Image 1 (spheres, rainbow, N blue to C red):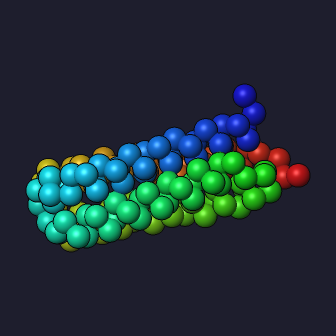
Image 2 (tube, rainbow, N blue to C red; image 1 turned 180 degrees about the horizontal axis):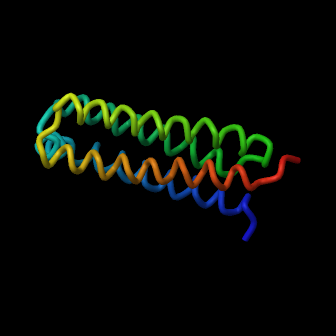
Image 3 (cartoon, rainbow, N blue to C red; image 1 turned 120 degrees about the horizontal axis):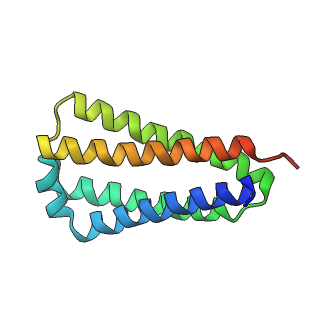
Length: 128
């Protein structure tokens, strides 16, 4: 399998994850608020809707020609690292319950892994 194919797969996996969390956040906003121990349903729903939008962009990117795929994948990875940074700040600020901090950290680790996988496979692709 080529590096380009691996990059497209990494992006699609990211989109599936983001979309799944977005759907869950919309469908179960009250439960997410309870789990995190902070916030309100409106904030959860807004973040969830943002995740669905992000997932759509990532799917679109995964179908782009290679020259666009490479530049857009970099931006998506930077967005992933922004999510990780924001999660760390919120956890460090003590805004989550202990269970919410663990869940947030686990999600941030998954998002970090997507960002790294995308950066790594992007670096292996050839520029046309």
